[in-house]
Image (cartoon, rainbow, N blue to C red):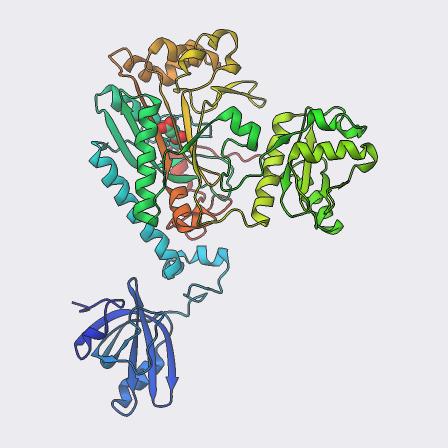
Length: 585
Ligand code: ASP
């Protein structure tokens, strides 16, 4: 046995016990004839004391220790003279009588402390050292706890956890596939699952009734702060259910997780909002409902003036930033530059301040009468001291999205996006299809297995772009934390869906014949959902990026800088796989 206790365990009640601890040297302080060493493991930090007078050789050895050396010590628990209230073991220290150096360490490239001096790249390169920091480790502990709570909640409801394979064919979720060449089947490739969508549906055909899996999914797409090429989903499917049944089950799960992981009781049923309403009021299918600042449509109000920029606008809309009328000219110029950045893409920003006397002073004063500006203020329900921010554009959807970004930015600046406040809602009635300019065809907005809303089925042939899906997303604080749908279980409807999506019958058969065939053998009505585990953990932990709750994440270019992956492979391996590399610059 290397140790009798962990480094986070001993308390004042253990005084005078002889104990053995093992762990890493956090720091060494020499004070006169005494040497203090903090020893750390996953559980905490304990102070060790070496006394020159009592044992000069041992004290000298302690002074030779470096940061991150691995040591084992035996000694007596002693009540500290000056206690440290900030640490659980702060009432005691260990008077060391024996020490064994288990391993030396090079000087770490950054300090292993919550406030580390290491930049992102360095910490990722030495992620195993980064993971020694309590603040990072805590996120993984929370993740572990979340997985346990998910398993408890779902098992209690009769869900079975079933593993599905990683080496499969394409399961489209709107991203590119990661592919794996097969050595035994030359010239052929597996695709890693973008999700286990088709497999979980087959489990329903198999009569499993309620399935879940905490599962890795792989999507080759451009990375953003909340995206990783591989990520974890809590993937679920149920048979003989309606949308309402699924919403009840998974709203219950969200409440259970908030209660057990954050001690937060979420009241009442979550808000539900049809997609079209979310787009109209917030310009987003994942509105951040922690604050208001709803869009006000201003086509009627602002087309009355002579401002030429509004002439060919298909959408003019604004938000009211409360109390921001005092923004200086410089701040307004900066905000205008901000909306014009390529990431946002607005052409400009119109603004109007409501003065203390109720009059309005705007950047377009010369195109409007004072009465028209008062009408604007009234339409936007702006008060003295408020700032009205207005965007316009010839593409209504794009302009709404720009206004959405501006709303989020203003919400951030005004401190309205509090990490300790949680606003959850379901967004429903998504469009079934969206037009892809790149592919020049309709694409499934969710995925091709989604059932249309029953009342919209007759429009599949006539007006497919107006068909709504029996699909739902759960949104928390402006982040999509999960989504799913009722599925098609009728082989004819599924074939029709592939046809609308531009698959020839042969192509549909080749790629998804297995599913349509299975539907011929008594497929029950079914539906499901997947929650993004990483996103949930980052919300519970108050993190800005999902990277911080993943043990070994990839960077923004999809690289693992620690493993230096991806990397080239040997010619011999390429030959075995019948592959040739031909990079066109
Ligand atoms: N497979 C879907 C996804 O990964 C979730 C679902 O429909 O259950 O987004």
